[in-house]
Image 1 (cartoon, rainbow, N blue to C red):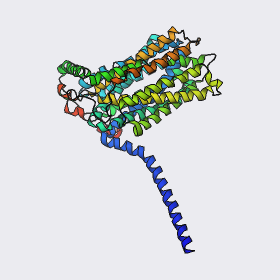
Image 2 (image 1 turned 120 degrees about the horizontal axis):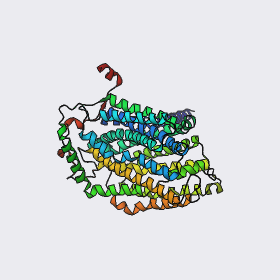
Image 3 (image 1 turned 30 degrees about the horizontal axis):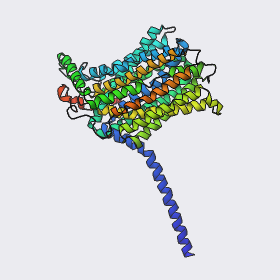
Image 4 (image 1 turned 135 degrees about the vertical axis):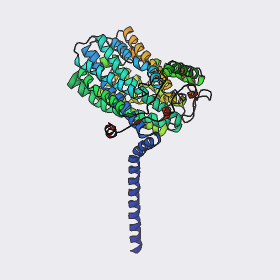
Length: 501
């Protein structure tokens, strides 16, 4: 009996120890993201993390989701344009993102009233508020004025974005081991914001209409304005404005010197081609899914929920990249993502040909799977490109050069949109005719594979190592910038701001 009692006690201790171990594991899994967030706040300063969450999470993530769904229905139901025209118009409204180097150059070398960042946040927020309220309050607005307002709102988001991009690129240079973590923070903020936005967008479009959603979009713009109000930034006194032209010239020379290096222009060329050759025919698919007689006739709420599921896939991939893929070399990761992107497009072909119904798969379930897979692959392709772009920025002109690299990507996306619009026009895909939509999808899928043939332009370097040669790794000495420029931007609390007043 003594031995049996000892065995029983020993068994109970093992069970208790196992339960404690499981509890510790669960607790560590829950605490890991929080600890990671705290680590970034300590290493990079909490103000940087806060700024990323506001600009990427609220302005771009939440606001971008509202804008995307609202604009699709605005063009289809209010302006009543053709799918190919809607593709072209969406490209026009993205032009402010192509001229991001201009915004970056202004914030780098042209202070206003002694401040380099605060005035641009204020201007971006004001531009967004005015443009969104103008759209929401005017019925039967001519397409020209509607495009001008949408472009102005897009410019407001782009101007706010370029300032945060400068901080990301600058911190990537000073903390190279955290470059991937910073991009993960940006993507997590954007993905969570988009998830919330897409979950609500369909219902809000149904209840308020597209114009009502534009009124709500003034709220993220107000928050961007608030960031400018709360921004604590050292003021530059006695700035020599006569040196602005020289600063522009020096920055342009430094950018050109960097771009001439094969280590820089080769991956830039790949980034442009990889986006440009992946033709965007989203508007054709949207019109087919909502208006076509043979289509699934999705409601506004369904469109929003489908996009929300896609955001979940994007969020999961961001976590996967952070914890499992961030140390893989750029070329290997881009090879598989580009290949999977081309193969995933075949799901659209199966849907349009209605083969999913022949296999007994409902439209909604099939589209949810399609949206999840496509968003996951796009995000997985985008993450290493962002890390690579941040590592190609020379010190001293981080904001301007990172904006230039992003403008190359956005030019590729613009080419993709306009090329997709031309493809829809050539195959006569209209508001009521979708007979040749399957052929446009097939051609798009084939073109998605072609960037694999120029993948040799991307370096095989380790993401944790520097990608710039020594002769261009430090362009700061050629550009006159104050010493305080390299300090992180600080966002003071509202209470402290009010006390100062």
